[in-house]
Length: 346
Image 1 (cartoon, rainbow, N blue to C red):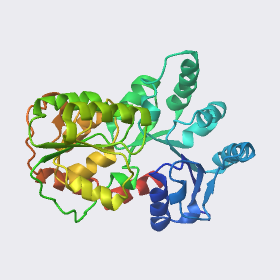
Image 2 (cartoon, rainbow, N blue to C red; image 1 turned 180 degrees about the horizontal axis):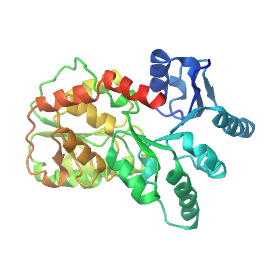
Image 3 (tube, rainbow, N blue to C red; image 1 turned 135 degrees about the horizontal axis):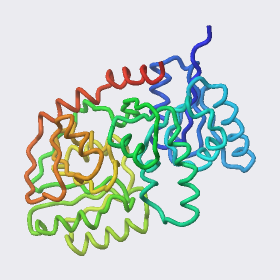
């Protein structure tokens, strides 16, 4: 008897190569097939007989989409890693009978497209297609119930919620991170040069502390170069040498050392974002500020994790949160992740 055939559809973003490696190591690779569009992490992808890439030519893209339609029909389950790709949405709109076996792994931008973007005629057409697809997709996969609630509210999603940590980047890492001693208070703002970090607003909240012994680190190695330059200009003007833009990409090991040196992190996103960074910092016992009106705020509060409200940034206290470490270690564990994936694939 053949095993269940599970088709994964994704763009090769930074989360995907480690995810594929994890699935191939812990599950029967003959039951999993990965059909990918090219993305930012193409070079990190290990060659495997159950992975195929679209390519860049017009012909290869056409072949990919034809392949996608055929393989989705043949698969027992389809895991959709994000629904940001409008071509994928169009295909699913035209093949609604496939939706009952589709599992939508919610990334964030694919959900919050409802709120962002210019509300012109083109946006309305896209949202019309997305409403039909999201409304009837069989399963909603995330670990943040607030995002499921928004999918139901905005798109009328009727699918069943399946709890899953989704990617390895969200797991607790028991790193032996050297806690570097510094005379200054080291503050991280955001995780990228994407405007959704709302850097300027976050920097403004730190102005009352500009004469204190602080260093402000801002990761700007990927995202909008134009926005990065605006942030650098404003940061230098307000804080001078205390402002430290990070414009070069850091390998993971070096980035962990950097996170180990941080005392306070501020994530001023207005939607669910930067969860990998947030979880890693909370797992290190760091002081983290986010917005109260985000879905991750309720998630952390429900888990008993101490998180701070950006609107109440009144001092720069930064005691190590050992209780947060224990909670993060338990919930974001590899064993919990494996159990959730077994339920998802079963």
